[in-house]
Image 1 (cartoon, rainbow, N blue to C red):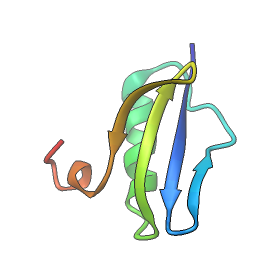
Image 2 (image 1 turned 120 degrees about the horizontal axis):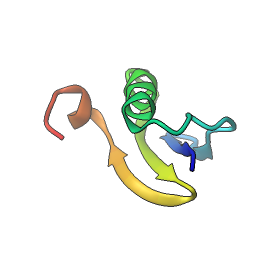
Image 3 (image 1 turned 60 degrees about the vertical axis):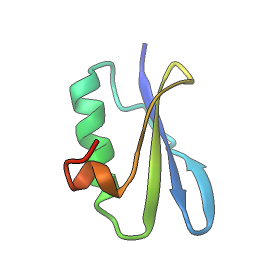
Image 4 (image 1 turned 90 degrees about the horizontal axis):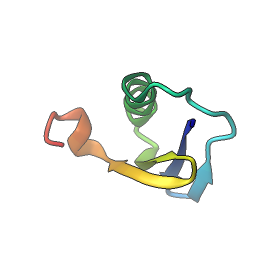
Length: 64
């Protein structure tokens, strides 16, 4: 069971080409690091292709 992410930018949605591991806390940490890029609008975290959560600027502001 692995986590992946779909990254939304102004250019569209792109699937992250590498898995983020099997640990949820680590996967969320990697999502938040990528979300800090101003070009990123939102990120969908998936586990085995099923949606777990969607993160946007509110996650960085602590408003999840």
